[in-house]
Image (tube, rainbow, N blue to C red; front, side, top):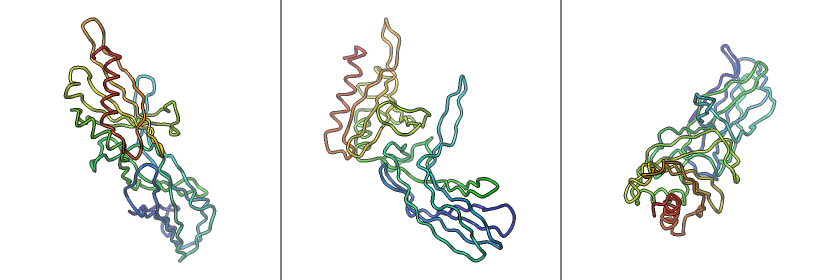
Length: 257
């Protein structure tokens, strides 16, 4: 995909195109491509060119909530250079995708409410020029996919997903986290209102957070209950059994089992 940036206002300016080699990755991979710079009609002074991953984050401020673009994993492609008329330059880049990066796709299906892409920024003397977002699909790792499939087999249905501002305790390096929401079904209908799943990925193990919106009993109000556990990032173990065990532990804490 192409992204075109104007290096300066007015006709005849140099242009910068970011061309991605692939449009789909998984956490722990790299987004690769090249930045192509073509000279305009006059010499153009460029201070630097950077690429970065970008997602949309929900931010809570007091009683209000708004959505904000959040860049992360920024990488400088080139420092200061002068681009003359007729110049055609290419700068390769390899942008790491952090293990905690939010997913945009599970089982080949897009998650509504989650966007991800690569943003190219051009710094010139007058300021920063930001181009359009080149979309990137972030697909689930094997362990994440197996956990989602286990939930679906137990009767949970996908509700939605979002990315929220905030840093989770216990090793997350990003200033935001993803929540994937499910309606409760099967034997869990009537015990859970819904279940929110958050992944904190890693090369060997993925930490998982189950946050259950528990229904209240006759003498108690409903409340959220949180459970942390780990699964192998590459899958392999009986993740279905792990999921059942963790759901049972949530219900036991609430007195349902």
